[in-house]
Length: 555
Image 1: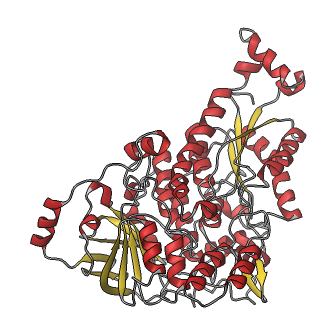
Image 2: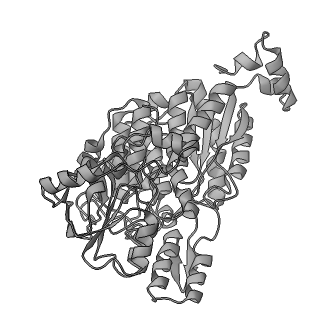
Image 3: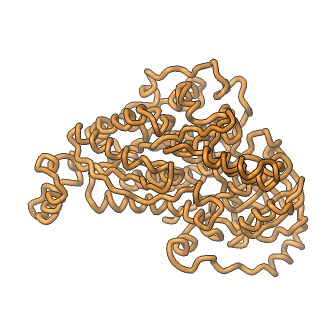
C-alpha cells in the first residue's frame, strides 16, 4: 500500500524525513497510511479555479476517512478568459507544461503513493493528465465543474457574450450602458466557462477516457452535487491502490478514439487536438492528425451546445449529463464501452445505473438526425499547411470559402483592423506570427473572432492563423497552421489581395499564388527575432514542437 512513501515514513535510515513529517502534524497512524498528493490548481484570480482549494479540503477529508493520508499542494494556472487578447495569453499554453512538470516534481520528489488532481481552467486538465501518466501511480482527476449561466433581459449569458458584446459596442449596435450590464452579469460565480469550450471539452474527454469518476465533467461547480462528487474520491483512490491500477494500465488507443468521438458528438474545442496529441506522446500511443480526421469523418455532430449552438453544460447536466451521453453513444456503437477506468470497472459497468438520455429535449440530437452527418473538426492540408491545420466547421458557416487575404502580423493589428473597418465581406483574415514559437505560446484568437461576430461579419469572412482558438470561437475559422510563420511556413509569405481557398469537404487549404512568385517572396523573407529573449517564454519558444505534434516540449 505504501509503495513509495515508506522510503520517507518507515525507513530507519531516514530519521530526518520522519521528523519533518511529524513536524507537519502527522501522527504515527497517518505515517503508516499511503500518502496521496492532492494537486490543486486553485487560486483566487480566476472563477474557473477560485473554489478548487475548498474542494481539495473535502477531498482530503474523504481520503482520511478511507485511511489514506492526503497532502495538499498547489500549482499554477493562467485564466484564458482574463488573459485573452493581452500579452498574458502567451503564457496559457505553456502553463500546460508547467502544470505537468510541477505535479510530477512534487509527487516524485515527495514519494507520494498516489495523486488526485483538482482542476478547473483549460490547460489544467491536460497538464494534470500528462503528470499522472508520467508518474504512473494510482491517480484520478477531479474537475471543478462548470459555471452557472448569467442572465440579462431574459437571455442566458456566458463569457463569450462579453467578448461579442465588445464587437457589438464598437459597431454601434449597443451602447455603453448595455455593454457594462452584459459584462457584469456574464459570469455569476465559480466554475469553468459554461459552453462546450475547452475546459468542458477536456473534462468530458478525460471522463470517457476513464480518468475521472462518472458524471464528474458535467456536475456544476456551485452545487451540493459537486461536494458529493468529490466525497467519492477517497474510496476510489483506496480501490486504485488496492488494485495497483495505474494510468498507463488504463490508457489505450481505443480510449483516445472514445475521447475524440465524444468531443466530435458534443462539438468540442479544437484545442482538444493539441492536448490529445500531447497526451498521446506522453502515453506512447500512436495517435496523429490523421486519426482525428478518420474519427471526425465517421462521427455525427449532435450537440446544440455553445459556442455554435444555444445551450450550456448546465443544461446538459439537467438531462442526464456526460455519462448519459456516453451511454447513448455506446448503445449506438460509436464508443467502446469495454475500456477499463479508474473505478477498476469498464465504461459499460460504470454506466449500469446511469439513466438514459431524456428524449424530450433538443440539446442532443439523435444519431439518426444529427446537426451534421460528420464531425465539426476538420484536418486541412495543402500548400498553406503542409503539416496540417485544424478547422472548426459546424456546417452553419458553409463548407467552402474563397476570398482575398487581409494580412495582420499580430492579434492587436487584427483587432484594430476589425474595429476600424479594414476587414470587409469576402476577406480571409490572416493572423500570423502567433504560433507556438512566434507568439510565443500560440495564443488564442477569441477576441478577433468574437469581434467579427459582433460587427456582423460572422458569416461573411473567414479567419486563418498559426495561432489557435478558444473553445468559445465559432465561425469559418482555421487555426494551428503548420509550419508556422516564425519558422518560414508559407503563411509568412501571404500578401494582401492574395486569394485563399478553403474546402472543408475535401479538407484542403490553398494559397492561390504562382510558385515562382512564392519563391521570389521567400528569397526576400527574413526570419524575425524571437519576441522574448529570456524566461519561460524564451525557453518555450526554443523547445516547443509544431502544433501538428501537439506543441510538446519533451521530445
